[in-house]
Image 1 (tube, rainbow, N blue to C red):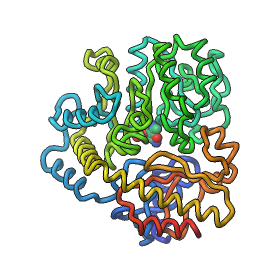
Image 2 (tube, helix red, strand yellow):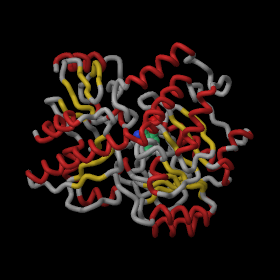
Image 3 (cartoon, rainbow, N blue to C red):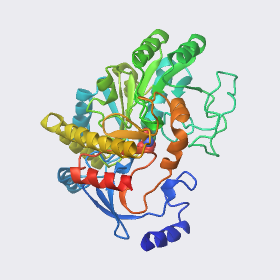
Image 4 (cartoon, protein in one colour):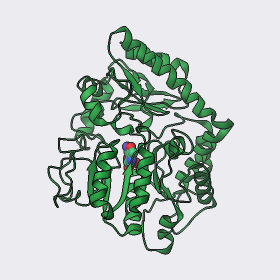
Length: 429
Ligand code: PMP
């Protein structure tokens, strides 16, 4: 890969590790891309890949969907630069209405640009609404890179509160964070209702929000235990706590109504990003009118120059229209390709005598090397599968044709049977 290597060297002189994070990890692999079509990507050396990264979630339609591109071009020809909160368009309303029609909790919708911002705004709304400072989050649930919600190294809680359990070196460890960024949060194990109940018995009156990925994609594609989300919902009602679902990954990917519709538990607030823009940066907070309307009265302010930027709104509208079509034909296609890929991967593992489990919701799954039938938390993953998993996590295929990261596989609507077979052949090597 001579051209990629040359670019890597050139980048090192002007970009700190390129755009890649995670010290020396797989994302800093010297690999530069030139173009894409459907579910295929090409690097500058002409190697062809099946794209199972999908930009880390946004690319639900695959590359170059003609209708999506048309919508963006039309928007560019109409108007693309408007300051948010000053100039609005009718499409803003249309998009908010669409989201409200699909997402159970969405009585009101506010647009942002990234998932991190959406989470930040949701947290602020919850704190203002409850007049309480704390929030509860869960191990390996990822809610963006802002100091207050980032996972990391915590040895003791500054006020002697229940110790955040994530005390070992985490994937997202960073120096330079505000020293007491954790001060107003509890970090609990997920899918463990007893720990949550105990914590709330003592501290529930101080907790503004519980925020979680309703399906834990960032910790191994874990489903909630039967009854867990329902009980969390009850506890939030009992303690007057805002229940937030982080649907940045699951939103519009698991289905038009997100995980909350699929699982039948409605939060008070939900955060969206990734697939909402179909590839362009778009994010949103959606939720109950009473909480969201704090933005209308000015009790809570959010900001963001690019919030609701016309190109992003057009991208989201186009994406949702495509996802709505033919009673969810895109989702049926994703299901088919996911099933084929899953079957193929399990077959490869079986032939090699490697224990394997494929788990995750529609559109994104993990291949876990364990003989357990299901993994419910990151702790379980560590115990059951991780020693082998690590090897897998850091593998970047050298021969092209297969591209995934962090052990997760994102499925786009552009994936064909030929793509899947090609990816499987590569995985088999
Ligand atoms: N929440 C979840 C569940 C995510 O997976 C991510 C991104 N991986 C975020 C929030 C942050 O979104 P962004 O990277 O767009 O800021």
